[in-house]
Length: 173
Image (cartoon, rainbow, N blue to C red; front, side):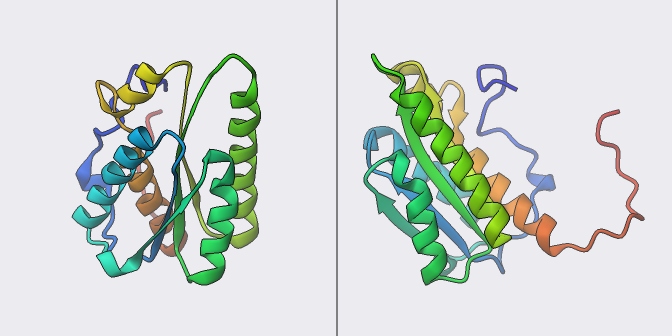
């Protein structure tokens, strides 16, 4: 669903597991810092709210969004983490650089997730202009950092919780 149709900061708090035992990494791009640092603030708040301790949240900064995957790999090598959240912002310019960066980050995080067995969360704001980015970094469409944090908690829980097949849950159809 497009973020224009859903507020990125709104979620069912009752559907978020306890994060008190989780060790989480956050990689933040410095490029477009006025946006990415707001994403970071939006990310940390729900992690703490749902029980993660500050001591179990490990943050590194990288120069730009293209370096998010390398930063995640380095952080994985330094800490035993349950998940890594990558936060960045790529705004379309006069060239197609945004397409290359966005695709590289998406493929890189998918690869890291599959090879490490740990969730790597795509918290990249990919917009046509700066206003759209601001709208997704605490503006009228909420904060992508909140969405990324909740996604990380839920994915770690999914990995750790046994699936028995006995759960009878409706998933909308």
